[in-house]
Image 1 (tube, rainbow, N blue to C red):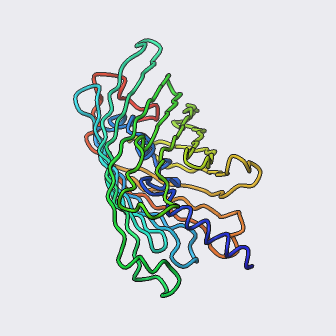
Image 2 (image 1 turned 90 degrees about the vertical axis):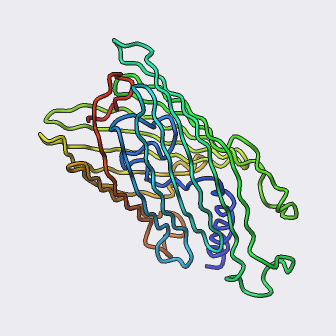
Length: 320
């Protein structure tokens, strides 16, 4: 029991630093919103897409991480898209909030074989804060006499390749080293916050207006070599009005512990008349399972102005 608690505390500290300048990614991207992962998806699909997410991790553990975020992206002209995201994240006595402003451009590699290439860039603003008012006296460095706050700016760059119903995305986040001048006395704080994501999948058209979409999502943090992988499967069923419902499953594991999954969980949702709803539940499968009831993510959204672009490079492989 003591070892489990110590491990949890160490894990919490690690995520407090590791998530800084990174929006925590659970299953938000699977709510038909890959823009969560990379700016390259801005402007692909419906002309104006809005998604709001609420995530509560490890329900049942006091001060466990929670996150709220809003994403919006839309097409400009025929071959470009812009997007913006805002988020608020709390993890114990640390919190962060920020925004990303994104631009993507999509080009045709081969019109007849439906091959497209997209480039994306995001400008990130992040505010990070440590609230010492909640700390127990005599348990932390006495030189810390007020709340610690810092604001940082950085960039993400991405590349997306699509070939008919196949897609492959590579994104590099926080490509600049962090400025540590304000917290120069904190030896544990990392300067290197670069991280990389690969997201790839294939939309399989089946009979009776339905689709099956297997996908994989890989994350790697350069500072300490941590990496994880999500294996996902989704099923969509459409009606004559282009509305649909969907269901799926996700499996997440650390890449050095493939047979010891971190979480496993079902997902479901629907889209009707431009309104979107999604829910996912991840069952914790490590030693923390005895102390929490899992992680919950709720997504609501709206799709507007779903006009077909003159350029096929802005059409989604998912049925629209």
